Length: 552
Image (cartoon, rainbow, N blue to C red):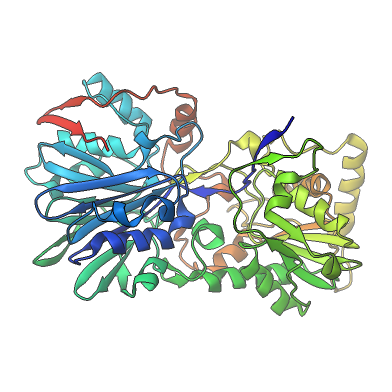
């Protein structure tokens, strides 16, 4: 009997991408193309709402952008303003009702919202609003914003948006479309990117600048943290709706999420990733014959590693770009079937070679283990894994779908990573002691190499050694699990250097476990455990009147 196999995707996922167009006769088509360029930010569902000045027209569905927006669908989206959204859903909420944009009709008028980010306080607000009589139609954070906007005492929409967003904490890059206006807003810490562009007199707003490149728009600037842009037929107005807070831009945008050709947080992503590869080669050199990336995300770092080390770059793994989510496996089971569908080794390149295998990150480690095994079976003499970010030890609560601590292989609470036996631990600690002893200059041993990291202020030598031992022991355990000859992560300090972060402007919570928003972890962990039934579309009573979630 044939077996249906779910294709594993052991990666972090950004929740969404947004694209807005205002003042162009083919607004919906441009929004569609913008979403097509942002497809990497979400593949579960997509939607576009357009305005013809009198009415909002909505089309959304599950699936990929190109499959949803056929010519006949785009024809049902008239007007010179449009807002598009593409979404990656978290576990358990893959349904059309959670697809965006959300269109509502409330006391502030009819409006559509598209949101990229996550609100750690959303679960608390949801409970509070439900106790006040609000009825929720979705499980998304965006609807919390919707209810707070509807309940606001502010007389106009810009005031209501400011009032609502100043009550929540977290990450949001938000687009709002009415019959005759568009708003673009970014949280005061600037977690997620949002850029402003222009095309033939029309304004374009998108999560990444690669959306501008496709439609021929010119990048103007980023929407600033804590800024609200109000775009009307009279022009554009900038308002700062929130008090200034320390910047916490998501560093993983440069590690993995964003397209390499995008300008994110003022820096070209490709440059950051190549620099990560160069710094990785300096920190973790190893005698090797070829540098091989795990495509596609590992390619820029592998290029940088090759350039810095002088070891030739080769495409020893080829990616199949047309892989779906499920496949029927033959009766006779094929080992590592899911990985082989996506990646195929080139034995003629790998056979007999000492391979440096470069990837952007390790999450659970299950896919990386299969890739290492596949490279060995293709004939590689040695496999040295190099990762262009530090060990991921904590979940993200600011717009990234990440596993729990127990599922993260580098976490102290990991249930995936095997632990060293007492005998292995004793041998390993003896090895570390030898490494700390004075030795002549030269290439450091490559068998166990820590991701390094920034040392906490006031840390004593004893505490530093204890922390270092724990980090290196964890990496050795991961190396054994992967079956690699050596394993090296880029250090946290080098990660900051690669993105030219001299002021501590980036969020690195997934590598440190230190969160900039109080209560993030508790709220989100509790939220993961909540089981929220999706109610049928119904009216929601607010302070200022009634809010109606408009169905597709």
